[in-house]
Length: 151
Image 1 (cartoon, one colour):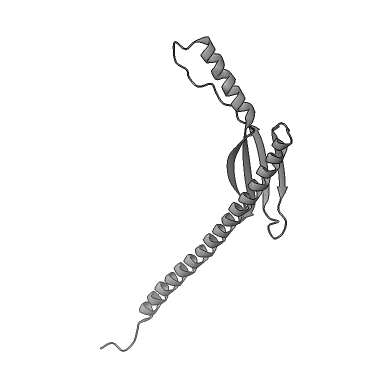
Image 2 (cartoon, one colour; image 1 turned 60 degrees about the horizontal axis):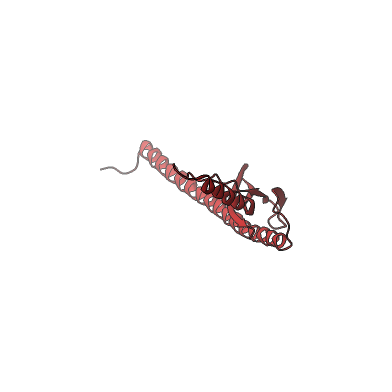
C-alpha cells in the first residue's frame, strides 16, 4: 500500500497546474486586449458619426449660400477626452463613366447621356471621413463614406 506521492508525481502535478494557470492568465489578458480594442473602435465609430454630421451640415450651408462644392481635404484632432484620436475629411468629385449604350444608338442619345452623366458628376460629391488612433503601438483607422448632391 502506497503512503505518499513520489517526487515525480508531485513535479508532474505542478507542471499541469502551472500550464493551467498560464493558460487562464493568457485567456484573461486576451480578454482585456479584446475589450480595449472594442472600446476604441466603438469610440471611433461614435466620433465618425459626430464628425460626419458636422461636415454634412457645413456642406449644406455652403450649398445654400450658392457656393461650388470644391474638392478639399482637411485634417484635425478631437478635444479631450478624445485627444488621441485624429480625423481626415476628403471631399471629392464623383466621376461617372458614360453607361454602355449598345449598338444602333443615335448621336442625340449619346450626347444626352454624356450631358446627364456630366451633370450628375458636377453635382455629386463623395465625403470620406477617416478616424485614426494608436492602439498597442499600431496605427489603426476607421473610414466611412457617403455622398451628397447639390440640387
